[in-house]
Amino acid sequence: MSVQFEIEAVSGSARAGRLLTPHGAVETPVFMPVGTLASVKGVPQETLEDLGVQILLGNTYHLYLRPGIEQVERLGGLHRFMAWPRAILTDSGGFQVFSLSELRKVTEEGVRFRSHLDGSTHFLTPESAIAAQIKLGADVVMAFDECTEYPVDRARALASMELTLRWAGRSKTYFEQHKQEVPWQHESRATSSTREPKARDESSAHSSEDSTQALFGIVQGGMDHELRKESAQRTTEMEFPGYAIGGLSVGEPRALTREIVEATLEHLPADKPRYLMGVGTPEEIVEYATLGIDMMDCVLPTRAARHGLLFTSEGKISIKQARYITDNTPLDADCGCMVCARYSRAYLRHLYASNELLAQTLNTIHNLSFYLDTMRRVRHSIALGDRARFLSGVRSAPKP
Image (tube, rainbow, N blue to C red; front, side):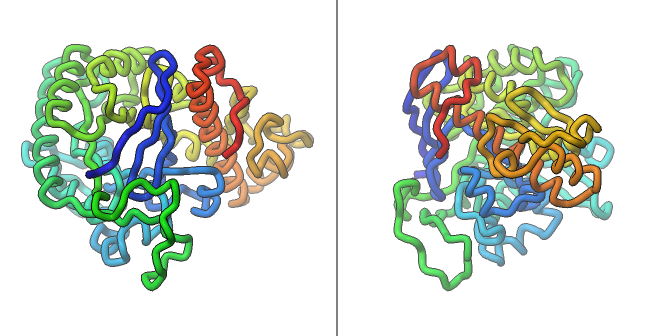
């Protein structure tokens, strides 16, 4: 058996639950920080643990190019390589290949593309994308799909959806033939090959005999409601243990994103985890959680942090602005993260203006903490059945 999903509380369309993986339980709805190259830029793994991160997202395309899938496999898989004892989800690389619009060619067999690093040519297929993720050892792996651009006509969206469905079938066939068992135990931060497994604790999900990787299917169909419905229905017929909504946040208006998410959710099974790929702002992740989304990821909190854009309970702050030169107050008085507890806005502004590396680290820690706390409050409100507090984003949930 692979991952399991348990719904523990419902409030309107929103639900709080647990995704049980070989590397521990993940409380949902969850925001997953993006660790593109086996690293959340600027933040060490022990800090991520202290922040309460339960699952990270790894990028198959980037790891495929550097350091190479075989290299990671030889070093014990992605968990051991990056010294991360908790759950990992890997994307298939489809979105990154999509972004190389001038460097790729899509065929029925797969996608031929040129590396953004050195221009070398590579060929990625549903089978090789799944093989790469299996070797990485992720708890959750994603089917290989094609993401369409925006705007796109219906004929193009239909052709892409059909191709994605065929690739989903090929992904599942290969996965079922080659999936691996994943050790259930948490590994300590020191992940040497001679270290003995730790005793199983309550956050571990399965015994060793039933811990296998899980493959999620991806729904496509552009911005067409009927195509999204058809894609969702035909994808669920393949009986994946979880389903993702892909192909959004590619330039369409935010209102249209929500419209497509709502239209797609109607056709996804209620008892399986629902993953919305690549969104969004703090307000958006709350909004999508209210609709019944269980999993989300986005580079926004880390990317914005590197550019001095910080999220607070009072709204966004651009710490590079001169107004903060003499501001001795905390970044966010309502935030309990280590950055807000210790450093002033003036100091954070000084670090950024001085191009100090510490600025990126502290900014990223705060933004991640803000996102994680937002999801924590959402889960708390769902558990209380208090939809009004949930929608208002109340900051009353206890710290972990």
